[in-house]
Amino acid sequence: MAEAFALKRSVPVRHVFAIYWRSLAAQIRSVFEYPADLWVMASAGATWNLLQFAFLAVLFATVPDVAGWSFHEMLLLSGLLSVAGGANALFADGVWSTGSYVVRGEIDYRITRPAPVVVQVASSHLGLQSFGEILLGLAMFGYGWIGAGLGLAWLPVGALALVCASVIQCALVTALCAVNFWVKGPMSIFAFLMIDLQGQSMRLPLGIFPAAVRIVTLFVVPVAFVNFVPVAVLTGHLSAWWLIGTPLTAAASLALAAGVYRLGLRSYDSSGH
Amino acid sequence: MASVDVALATISFKRKIAYKTTWVFSILFGGWSLLAGLAVWNHLIGDGELGGYDWPAMKAYLIIGFLTGTLAWAGSDWEMANRILDGLVAVDLTKPVDFQRARAAEYMGGMTASVPAAVLGTAAAVLIFQPAPPVSPLAGALTAFSLLFIFPLAFGISYLSILTCFVTQRYLGIQWAKDSMVAFFSGMMVPLALMPGWLQVLSWTMPFVHFTTTPASIYLGRVDTAGALGLIAAEAAWAVGLWAAGRLIWGGLVKKVTIHGG
Image (cartoon, rainbow over all chains, first blue to last red; front, side, top):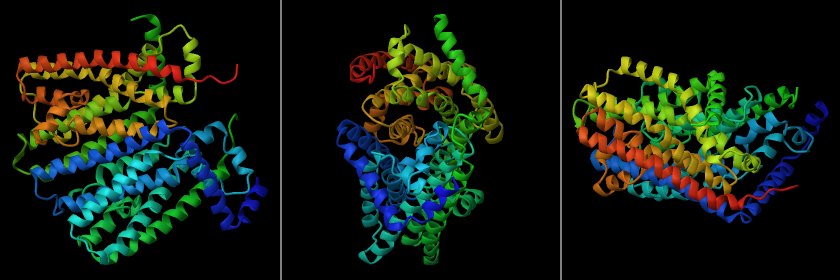
């Protein structure tokens, strides 16, 4: 086992990326073998975003604002969260299988390959709902952007927000799925809980929630940096200084995901014991 | 009900009840949704009212949604979906037990295991948040009766969702789409009374509405006794309709199963 780890440390970063893209490209090729799968899943991804849009449209037909946030500003919140969720499904959907790989002992042969296990697992599946999710998410984000009166000057911030949101989402989901190395079971229940937390609270202004929720989402499980903080900065609800927290959280989340996965692999003892 | 149905339901019940963490998580998922809903609507309604709901009525509405959501979440969607995704369905086809009936028995058994957690969570929510009481004892009884139909309705909707696994490789995205359909068209995300007329009509043409709007409307007296009985009849009709639709679609999709090896 120790030799396998020593081998992986010597793998160049370029090689790791090559493996990742090759594996992901194989998944993309398989998509074209099952076109019905693609259409059903992309429609599913589009459905929940359309319903989110409908929720906001219905709500804002009744009230002028929610805690000082307008319809278009809340579209930015929803859109960014959808893009982040879609990025997870597109680039690292395989991490959701960590639990079932551990239970079935399917991590075994991945350990023997000359590439990081987390990269192999992450690229072992493509969440086809991501196509609908990212498309509709970007549409909501763009519509909110124009409606909120954000000009071209803010585009670099918007691009940074999109990239960091995707990275934080992928990393936090990976870290929470890696909990299944210790809490055995095919369901990634902790990652589900995080997604539920985001779905319930991160599509709304944090100001309406009690202080405990704000502290948890900003500093404990920093999901607020996925969409709330960058959008609040873009729309002037938070000072621009907060924006520094977004790339920092992205870097910290990546380190956390890699660390938790590595620790998980150390305690992995295959199946059948 | 044959003894095989009872046996399958009992196995599923015991399996669910054995994992205490499932109890905790079913409360956590629904509880978080309830708390978020309370925070949002408290902010929006304040001392006034929206769509005919004042604050005590809205609290009752959200707690009913929590109860039905907790019950519906506890079903065994994933166990059913995995049977198709893993190919176990091929073995099921050789068994002298009807696939849909067997899954229904397991699903009901799993849901029943969540009843204590759902009831305890609801009792705690009622004590803490003090929602409006039912408009009359009869309305309270009819609400409880209408909640019984959540069982066949949740199974019918979940069964139709998992049948898509014959043409997809994963259930995750389908489950999220189904859950958001239930959340939106049941009136859990936003009450139907706030929706434009055409969207209300569209919602009433779907079965999801019976997860929140129907029991809450009966409980709060937004429909009279005749209206309540009509809504319960609609629930029963949907339960039968979804069962028949499941059978029809199964008939077409099962032809897609390819059994490797031999």
